[in-house]
Image (cartoon, rainbow, N blue to C red; front, side, top):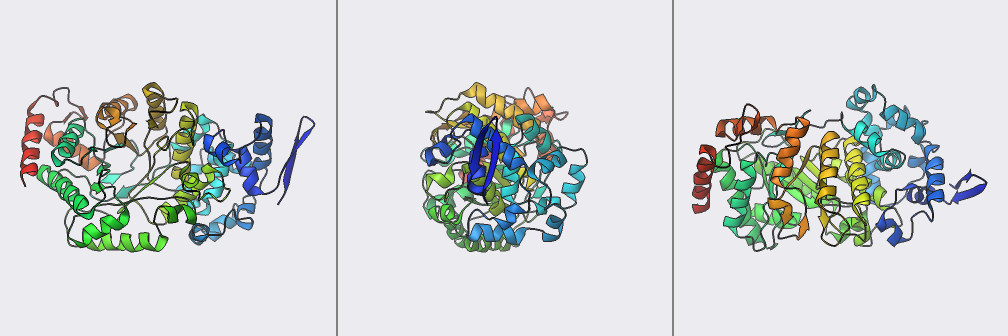
Length: 466
């Protein structure tokens, strides 16, 4: 459906909803690369004005793509709940989302009346403060070996990657993170080698470390999900099944992913948990996403990168995940050119994921050839903590020596917890207190050199010897 708006005597016309969404998006290098960005700031403002007047029902009547992701999104929609809001415009929905009463509506099921396309449209007409304020009170609680997502909980994934997957190096990096109170979200390793044997070795090593320390957390080796499932068939202890996903069928095909394969994988991991101890819930999936992934595999189909990202969240929530995070800034300046675009994308991704009911985290990161630095990373980290982000990454020294990018460190995460008064997952916090890493609910100043450190080090050596 064609839409137009006149701004100071100049008329801007948009052929369809797809073009309107792309033109209304905040500046993104990926959209410019795809040739679908607004040609000027005046056009961007005009598109935002037109978008604010679009009725929510139009997003159902005018699907952007015809593929299996769209089918999954429509199948997941609560049609009865949507009927109550379909006549609202995007602008009216913004006012509702920012109202004090919205959290109650959302918790009672309104989140299932929102499609990814609607949520992405909403994000375009919200300021940074709007994105933070709207996301902060929304909580999605998940359980695997511990409980994530409760109000006031700010989790951290330990990411102890090693360029050669050296087991001792991985475990000692993980130990370093535990001493800073990190690791409640997951101890998750990106393997340098994707062989089944390598994945099995890493899975067993992380399992042994957690088991030896009696730490209430989960592990994950972030190989392709088919490799993880092959490792599971050979007896590897899989806590969480990981996969990078996209918001279009073509993107997922480029990743070697099918919706049916994800469903079968989830069922296999759940079945394996029945024969193992320590699980308190059935959230077993871990997904990563990121603006620009669809364009990177030529799978965007003319849809802008913010909408493609939101659609990836539509895929994720169909599988009831334990964790989801956007790796914002990871794939380079071709998609997010600088710190300004990275910060905006991080706040957008977090808001969209939270509004769709996901346990949403962010990898606050950048590559070494983008115009960003650790100061801008600190800024986004604090903004996300204020926005109620479920978890961030803990990378040794903030420098991932295997993936060759910059993220947030263990001490960054610990410092932000102190700053905003947040805490780890409750079961994990109790363990930290028991181990002497936390004293009185706070990170002990002596934990790095005191008895807790020696105890953890000794226990970790025993895990290495297994």
